[in-house]
Amino acid sequence: MTKVLTVRVSAELLDKVEAKAVRLGMERSKYLRSLMEEDANADFSTAAGQFASEDLVGSVPAGKGPYTNERIRKLVRAKWFEKREKNC
Image (tube, rainbow, N blue to C red; front, side, top):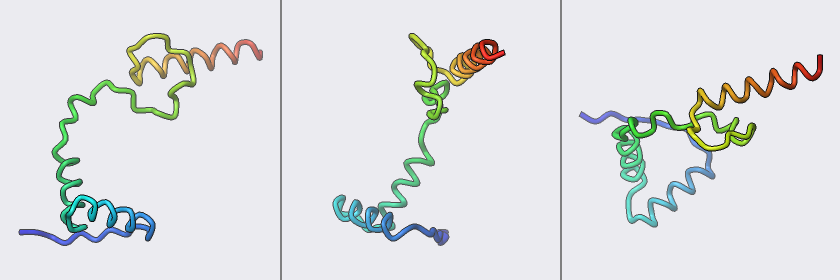
């Protein structure tokens, strides 16, 4: 049994979605369902260990990988303590 989903979006976003659906030759609802199905069925095991905190990317020189959240957090923390010691 299907259920109805209502989503509020800006007129600008709706226009972009409509245009993309038209370019793909799909109805808007079919296009959106395909996006949701693709995302819901995505294999997240390949994303494990990837760097998720994009706001910290480039904030410290990390050299060569691995670019994991844990490693970047340690580098940022070390940089913060280094600055703090210089200012004391």
